[in-house]
Amino acid sequence: MTASIEWLPVGHVPHGYRRVFVIKQDQKLRHVVNLAHMPYEWVFRVKEMAGVDGAVDPSLWWGLSVIASLVEEGMLLGAANPDVADDGYLQIRPQEPTKDKMISLAAYQEALREGVHVFTY
Image 1 (cartoon, rainbow, N blue to C red):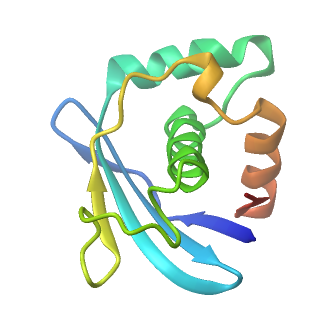
Image 2 (cartoon, helix red, strand yellow; image 1 turned 90 degrees about the horizontal axis):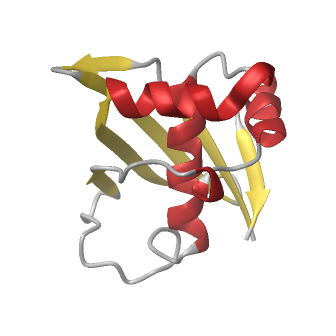
């Protein structure tokens, strides 16, 4: 199946970022996910992970990685997850990012250019 992730502009909460993502499955809206809070320190670590290639928006790279992971693990899109509300809204407090949990930097940069991250799972 094909999933796509779009995003709203970055927001701020005390001591961190808030990102809102819209997830579609085969072009059909399935979920709106609010990632909050994303601590500034952790977002800076994501920026460091990008190295010399850089990440223009490290909170976006991290957020896309979290959402893609949730889809691949079956927590979103077709899963019977009791934490997902009837309207498809889910608020998640992401865990500290690690390099092995991130989508590739190339996939992030392509999503940034296209305005959407599309992948199969």
